[in-house]
Length: 372
Image (cartoon, rainbow, N blue to C red; front, side, top):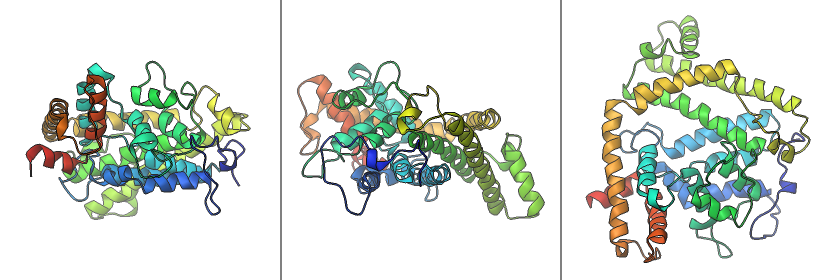
């Protein structure tokens, strides 16, 4: 049973290209399965989360991050009686549009694309699932349901101001109602992303030696978690101590979202999924206290991890590589692979080059740049 305000696959707004129903899978299950089987999803295994994928075997990549997000999202959606399959599909697809080299790559490509409308990874995810994946006989893209596309496009909230061109292009053909909030399932996927990356970035940062356990003990949520572990398991090996404490932080975040969201959903008087979209505020949230603690963790990670000198050195190198690749294909479009027909028009060519470069894995971009 699902809640009255959950997204029901029996009442999906459908697909851009009509298809016969499956006898064995719901519409949202098919969305999820198509995302998992896409080439863009497979490429995430060699795309940076924070550390370039070849730096060590145990750091998160975009793929492992997406899997962790989907695990959190499934749990939350299940407890809230939302549609788990739609939630999982959105969670698995939310980072499909990321460039190689993580946010460094996105910033570099956005800079290169500034004269041509910029670059946004969320909008690029829509372009991938509606056009660039080209395997099916009857359509480009994955022909996902409206509900799934809406969730990918605006899981972080309504799109206000100028709409990124990659999103605007599709929205002109299929109105995703960008001015409203997304479904509760999409909101779960978004907050699960926050929970996953803040938790695993702490773990990866400790593993990389960018900061120590002692450095984070004064942070909200974290000190209490370590104190609880130390009391229950004195003299525990450091790797186990770290794991036990961070999983408790993880649990606090999930439990807080569930508690707050149950209250907001119960008080919303929403009787359909459409009602959730027009409430004018999110219904899947943290409490103010936990959100403040999470913001303190984010600030710490920004200073001590994302802007750590060793990370910044690699970031600068990767930024230069991506700029070089973009300029190379803009200047020599004949070097693009077969099927990537470059236009003489600068705008069309730039957007084509951005599609190609943004789809690269870290290792492929490095191979092209260094010629090995």
